[in-house]
Amino acid sequence: MFSRSTEYAIRAVVYLAMKSSEDKRFGIKTIAEDLGLPEPYLAKVLQHLVRNRIIYSAKGPNGGFYADEQTRNISLLGIVEANEGLVFFKRCGLGLNDCNEDKPCPIHDEYGKLRDGFYKSLAAKKINHVIEDLNEGKTFVDFLS
Image (cartoon, rainbow, N blue to C red; front, side, top):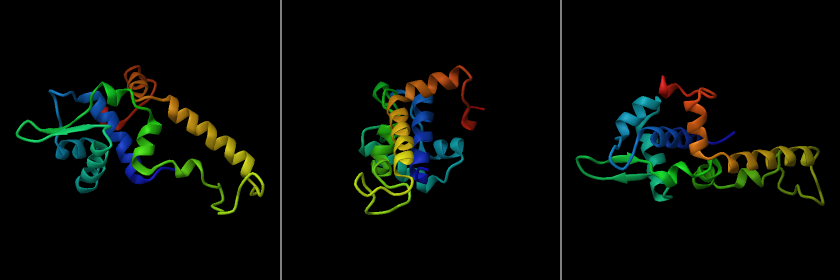
């Protein structure tokens, strides 16, 4: 559903929000190993997140990537938007260019309802909610095992 870079971005943000602080930073090698992701590709994803002020980085011997309270309060939709924009939520379910309210495609109404519901769910789900669910055992990610 999302691009690979957005999937990696969400995983990395959750990881950093759970494990890091301004005083406890993680290097790209550690993050990539812990998440099982390719380091060069993840480095580009993380730099993009830094440029969009979703996560932060510091240079030097104690440098690395980290999250703060602002990161924990961002919605999943915020990460999606920063990484790939919101085109997914405006696109026709069949990929037709001329699909609209006046000329709907065969799945226009049904897809629109699903898409709008997904948008609202992503907007409502904050990183701190994801962390709460993980801590309470309601959800699972492999980098915590």
